[in-house]
Length: 319
Image 1 (cartoon, one colour):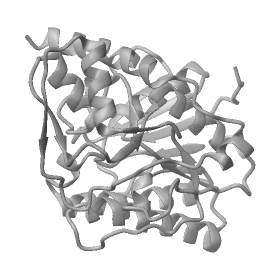
Image 2: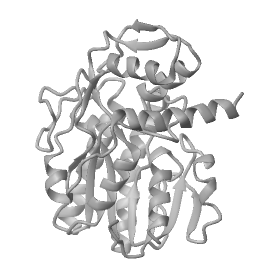
Image 3: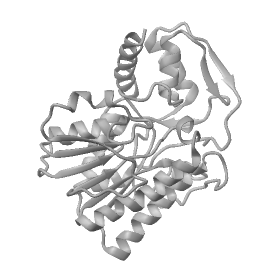
Image 4: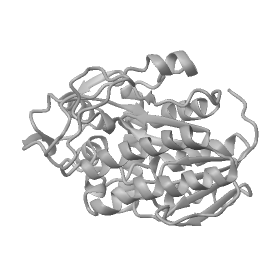
């Protein structure tokens, strides 16, 4: 395992799906962690098991407001990431990406801290280039229902690189592709959590469109490892860096696999495709392989088994 120097680290969105796993790994590596969340989509349940750790501190705060703490590094993960959540209050979603980035960049500037931005494959929009590499500028609708998230994240990238050029800030910008695993929000409407919950309840599995649209699914442990490796690269390597699993599956393939793994009696039904839903999504991870010697290790079947096991326990508790 790679060893990391002990630091005081702020994780925004730390009680969320990705954030809670990141906090866990940072603590495991011997760091002090400040976990910040406003609990819009995050949950204390995700980080209860960390509360007794003397190196863990929990802070309720919204990054749309300035923050004054002393830190060595910042991981900026705070932002609702599923359409159900980010479309509920689209103005606030944009504010979280834009105002939130300005506030966290300001904190990093004051502290001389290195800062990581959890950007997204959604900056590529509905791509005309396949697979997507970091040089592709994307194809995004600036006025659609997904724009609050897609364009918010694009603007955040602009801010990070302007702070880098103008203020010599130490930045790392990662474009995160579809990620899944334990602690996903059960009602976030994403395909993996949706399909698993429906399958475990023997309900109809809902596919939007014909199911031929493709996605690439990265297991959360692989993603967190990549984030840590990226954060520890030399200062001159800023990204953007694609992090995701290049194995590509159709949505229909995913549904069939989940029905099979859960021994479900669910039927698969089809509904109209939402506005601006990307037809294909697959990361080119050549740069991640070259710069951080990384590629995902967890197969879709392995990862789904872990995730199904987690949701079985969640549903059992909620009975």
